[in-house]
Length: 426
Image (cartoon, rainbow, N blue to C red; front, side, top):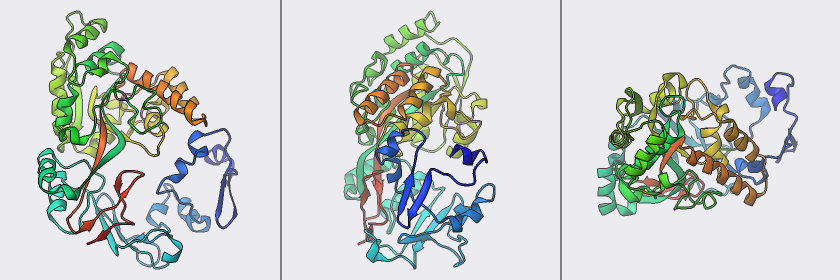
């Protein structure tokens, strides 16, 4: 792979297709998530024909995404010559039936004739439209706002599906901005937080259990990292412990136990419920004397220009969250905390964590192929991340799915979300 990326080879020698139905991948070193089949079980994993894709891949960047080949029951609507007409960037994707699909060779029933994914929606408006309308289902956005969720739980409970997502919500503290370059100050902030109050901004206990460390339930390493109780005094109290927080502030160089430095920059999402969470974070930090220039911006802007851009020097990002790519802690920990993932824009290492010891642990854990040893390794990494308080984990997320009353919903257990290939209209 490296030779191919570096331009020294025209083929990736470690990938071969000895016949029409076999893909062989040879690795330069052991990689745990490939050996246990995790990464290749992603719903979107599919090999594509070289003779079709290579002409688009020659362009920089590749334009294959706008000329995709489809073998399943659905395809993005196109002009009959391969050019996608059913994709409007940031706005919508329209799927229609694939005329060459043979249902006799597929396990998916694919009842629906057409599926449209609509983007750029106001969450409040979209949630109400789904619950009161016909032919709608929730997509890749947050749970409905608190008032909508509360109403749905009392009057439309059969239109909801609430399941653990194996995801986490956290507050990111930028380790390159004072005073958060000091681990004790970060621990103080973690100790002060009333996580119950934060959870109420998203709908209360329905949204998931309070987090005491990073790896969520049902992911290997969760129990080894402390389970529900956690291991650290500054994460254990869901209501927060101001006295303990002030003790850590004193250790961090603030003799009165209160922050006395300059105003800091905090940037969050401008849509509820995330905006409500951000406002609650600001109020919680005020208990330790912190003052902020708090900016609320559209979510894509928050990612691209602020929290994911180290030069912006955002001290606190209150709306952090991450979900698994597969049932393994690597996909939850490595992207968010490995120093090699710090990039100029659109990064996901919001704390700008770049600890050589942590980086080495993350790099070495990738190669562990024994499941028990792997769980222990990632628990050790979780201990370091939580113990050094790079982020403040506060919620192990539930996935709240909801739909119109004429839609028969089916959940894909891989990501706890709707599976359109199995759903139908009543």
